[in-house]
Image (cartoon, rainbow, N blue to C red; front, side, top):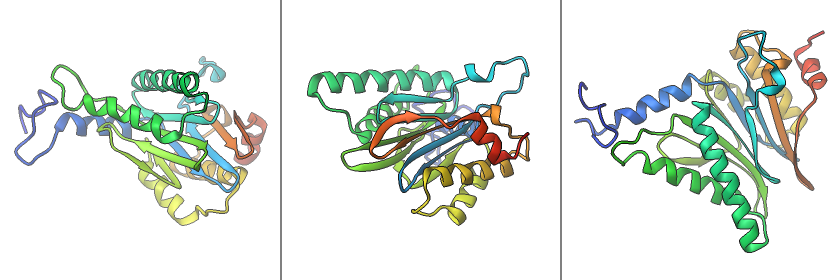
Length: 233
């Protein structure tokens, strides 16, 4: 494979874009993040991965609000994620000003993925080294999407990205049910993360956000609620 990873536009003899595959590896090294569509809303849970005790946990933000009804989190290079998040926020604002209605979740995802795809076939660029989970509630209902560095997106009921994504997905396949409430989904996500992170998980490391049907705005669970699930004192 020597030489075929020098440029993003160069295919290897077996039809692979190696720079894109390296970007996917970067995502798998990123912080764990879980998204779920629940009976009463949507939920995102992510590990802040705080490794320095001098860092202020509240200052670390891993879940972003794209619009009142859309939230997102990421795994991989978070500075890359910030560029995509800010682009999505602007697109949501422009849509509201232009059409006097909130943007649908899929349009936000497609715009993100269009930029990601351009970076896989343009010389002098590198792929975005980040995957995002985008969750929203629009006129068509509750939706959860995952985007990868190639610009491909998929819609899920529940999924995970980042560190331990394979193990977490196995847990979700076994335990996720359509009738789970947001609170039950949080308990499942915490159990999965605790298992994958070998009990190193603390309330300070978790960032959570959810949107309920009928009350379309981002909310966060309290630290006391998470401590109770983790059985911390």
